[in-house]
Length: 414
Image (tube, rainbow, N blue to C red):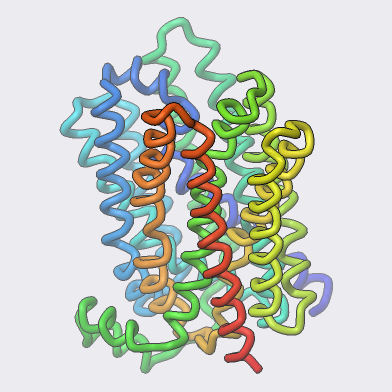
């Protein structure tokens, strides 16, 4: 590829990644601006939780829809539609409407951040390079997503802190998000190229078959199931470690809340950035993606066992938790690069990613329930560490499943 081609591809990857970052930052503002959101919209904890559940339900429903749309329509058009729709919804949001309207808004967020975006985004990234480059493409994209989210979130924090009225500050925050969506829409119009591959057979199938038929047919594919097992194992590790390692450090290792917050920032931003940019290059160095995934899962298992047995040596245990955070973020950054090795052709990326996501990304729904029960059980018997040990064993089990999934993927490629 000549220098111009490399520059164009880099710009396309940057725009795709920035769109992806904002696409999931705005619907999940409660993660960064929970108290401000509660104050500005006059919501209760239960109501905020309900909005999160509505968004999650619509996301899950829309995963297979996204796969069908990705193969039926132009990726570029779908990205433009997503940005335009998200901008309009966010403008409605900035009017600070009542709770019923907020439910509708978060349902619409689920539709336009997934149905018209998720599979088209994955498809567009995959088309930017050869199978030998997939790890670094997805890894770099994940790193760029993190950078974009950090920049926008920081700007929003600076802006909202400058207003005495929380409702005014939150409204301006949403306006900023809407403006960025519009800017990214125009960037998509002028930067994102047309699809490289037009597969008429795939498009005709998407037109003629119902979504239910497509889902059932896809679920008979061994390639789909290999991807589901690898991605589900990696995503479960990420959800668990990302959600609970911070509180583990505070409640089991006994570090201060301020130090725990500092470490959380390192894990949430610095590690995500490093894992995204380095993880992809690491995975691509292996002969097969299966071999790479197998060894990364193995490294995860070793780290988990190390955490389990070093909890009384605080400094060492903290270092190991940071290593574990790096490993799970490498998995999350690169597991979509396995599609080619699993036997899924580029022209089937849309449908495949939609079906895989429908099952493999469900840990969001059950991990908090399971881990919170482990912790509550430990508290109920006066042994909090035992509850967290159950969590570590849970992580170890999924690491082992990931290792076996990697072995199967490796053998399939060979």
